[in-house]
Amino acid sequence: MDLLQSYAEDKDDDLGPHSSPESSPPRLLPSKSAAPKVDDTTLALTVAQANQTLARPIDPSQHAVAFNPTYDQLWAPIYGPAHPYAKDGIAQGMRNHKLGFVEDAAIGSFLFDEQYNTFQKYGYAADPSASAGNEYVGDLDVLKQNDGISVYNIRQQEQKRRRIEQKREDEEQGAEAPSEEADPAEADNPATDAWLMKNKTSPWAGKKEGLQAELTEEQKKYAEEYAKKKGEERGEGGREKAEVVPDKSTFHGKEEKDYQGRSWIAPPKDAKATNDHCYIPKRLVHTWSGHTKGVSAIRFFPKHGHLILSAGMDTKVKIWDVFNSGKCMRTYMGHSKAVRDISFCNDGTKFLTAGYDKNIKYWDTETGKVISTFSTGKIPYVVKLHPDDEKQNILLAGMSDKKIVQWDMNTGQITQEYDQHLGAVNTITFVDDNRRFVTSSDDKSLRVWEFGIPVVIKYISEPHMHSMPSISLHPNTNWLAAQSLDNQILIYSTRERFQLNKKKRFAGHIVAGYACQVNFSPDGRFVMSGDGEGRCWFWDWKSCKVFRTLKCHEGVCIGCEWHPLEQSKVATCGWDGLIKYWD
Image (cartoon, rainbow, N blue to C red; front, side, top):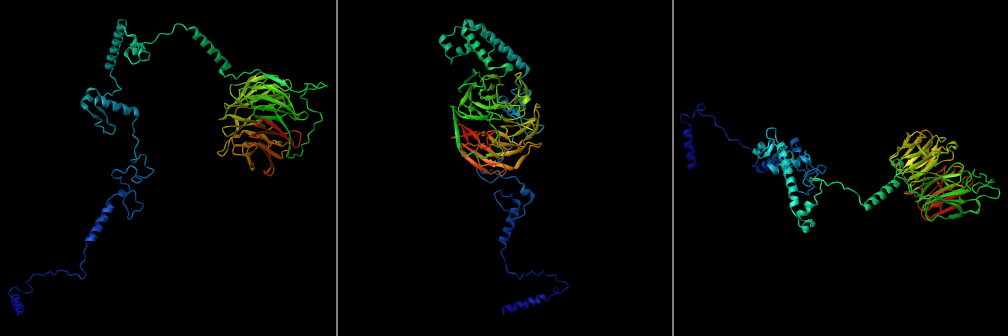
């Protein structure tokens, strides 16, 4: 009832004089939502976190970014110190210090020391990163007083004052010296000032010792011996002289001339060439042993092969009979160190030897006398006579100082030097009717020269090439076989372009590190080479397949030569000191 009464009273009030629709103000009703009430605190936090993510820099260690970063975020500097050993913090390529990336200071060490020492002494130094108005840091009053000089800039007045003071000190010391009698014990003790004054011989001491008036007898004797020794070591023109050993030769045969008066080196008249079709040897028929150390090279007597010449590491060169007795005929002794290379002249009456004693000697085969000796003071690695009969007086030698030296043996003068290689020269091979020659070297290249002109006409050097310590000419003169130190034999054309024949390659043997000789059979059907394990390998020229291997020597089989007349006779030599003959 109370509610009804109050309702009636309210109604009466509404119908009062001011309750007309025109006079009452518009009433705004509160908006109502049918959606249920939701707590939006989480939403507000999410939006705030998103805004924060967009504002903060990207973590360098994260691998994926879940939003589109702005340019400023991507290139923002890394904030705060990184852990010294952390992998993150800086891109791995940018890190050049355990704490991150350190820029190179654009200041020289001398300038830094100058400014550092100036600051330590005067209290000011130049500021490298300062603006134009304020270029110094430290005590500016002292800077103005000293006029901005560094410790390394001494003013003229100061220099003059120091010179006067130094002069005065020297005069005082000179005056005091006679009056002071230093204690002998002190003068002998290096820890005292008296000893320092007595032994004051440094270039900054002010006084220089006078020159010694005269040498003692002992000093004179030593000086003379030293000068004599130096004179012996040096040849003409300042070149080093090679070691000198008396030349000797011993004949081991029965007689030097036979009953008809023919020399022991004369070839047999009935020997004829039977090597139109060659065969591979199968068995050992003879062994020559006489060298006390390894044999470094062998050469058959030209055209006939009735004698074989051998160069030994025991400093001796020996010549052996092949056809008859099979014995050593003569020993040539003229080198003081191992003999490196040997080479016959065209008729076999003379031959060249090159030794590690830096000498090249030209011998008479029959008498054993040395005709002439040549030396540049460097080790000759290969010696060759010009193959033309009218140019048998021209000698070419590949030296350890990268040069090929050409001598005229009639005058003994060097007539040409071919100096282009970058390493010691290993081989010299004449091609193209002896108008050109090919050389190989430790610089892993081949160079082709016009004879007599010291300019390379063809230079062959590839990244895959190795050094080629032995090269041999095919009997048809169209191809060169080069022993490459990557355990293969490569074939080069001797025509204009000197191209590598990629279809012909002979491999299977192990020669890395050894200058094993490569050679051909007289008919050109077989290629042969020694190897580092004492074997001799034979390949077929056409198919490039291994035909046969013979176990020839204990140690390295360094040389192999096919007999110039026989169809299946081969000689090999090795570092075991033996020369073996195979058939």
